[in-house]
Length: 395
Ligand SMILES: Nc1ncnc2c1ncn2[C@@H]1O[C@H](COP(=O)(O)OP(=O)(O)OP(=O)(O)O)[C@@H](O)[C@H]1O
Ligand SMILES: [Mg+2]
Image 1: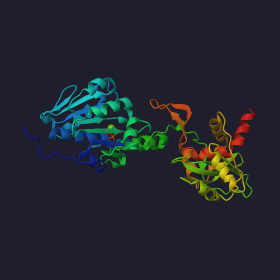
Image 2: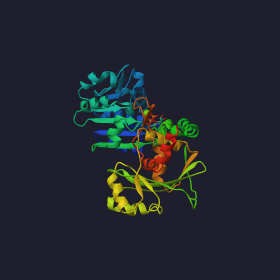
Image 3: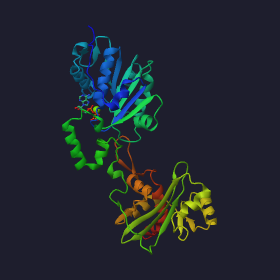
Image 4: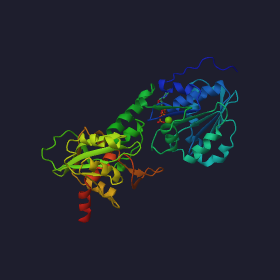
């Protein structure tokens, strides 16, 4: 039987690269972006035109129902290709010898390791693939010209597939972010679901529909505590200044704040990467009060503090003690509001992202503060360390 001469397929712009040879093809993003459909079409057409051995896998597949079997089956019918493919309960084969195999990774690691001649491997829901499964899978798919295709909705930055392809993209990979707005077939039912989610669960919306990493709102340390808005600094405020030193790519930060009516106001920041020691005085002078007021800096670098003292800054090391980070957080959370001036962009970003760690499997919030997004926040704690300490001593 000769293959059909013509198959009608409209490939959305974002999926064009799927049709060009490449070792790793990674499509990630929010719900309804067309990932599953686009990849199913590509694999069916490939299996029809060449002899392919396609492994369709995911971390856990308890039954064929949990695989992409159904999607492939209905796609084959939609494309009018039923007469070229045979379906059994557990596999799909093509008259030219191509075959689709369905297997979960976790429970079949050994049999997958010994699979020969896989030409294409599709990993669905790849955000759930464990480090071990990924490390076993990749060298298993070794036939010259073979391809690994990953589709997923990102969840946690530490997920193996996110780390290996989005954060550290290898050279022989195409990595494409796709969202519902890239899907020309996006159906009305999903549009309704999307709008409902945007209205009712704005925190989840960003993750589910915009394809951004999941930030469990409970993990955000300063959620609902701060506001970003313009305000006028009083003429005679009692300022607090704090400094954090940048190492490697971390920025150096000087921050200024004051307390008024039960609120903490952050009105000035300077924040820059790679500030040389010799340039620090000029950098600090950007905040006009930095020379008159006491600054508290990170005690980890007494050499920098000494150097600035020589340049006649009134700077001292801030004390750190067991639990000072947690107590600093509690102190800041205890204000009625923290009001951040919009010009303090880094501080705004850090208040948004400063988080507790999350369990990488269950996403549960853990009682550890992430050592990230904390340069302005550390500087703020140094600025206020005496007040923080005093509240502890009074307990
Ligand atoms: N090539 C296509 N032909 C027809 N309809 C399509 C096609 N691609 C996408 N759609 C429509 O868009 C919807 C979403 O597509 P799909 O399920 O492939 O997205 P997804 O990115 O895999 O979503 P999820 O993240 O929810 O798994 C489908 O249910 C279907 O209605
Ligand atoms: Mg899908």
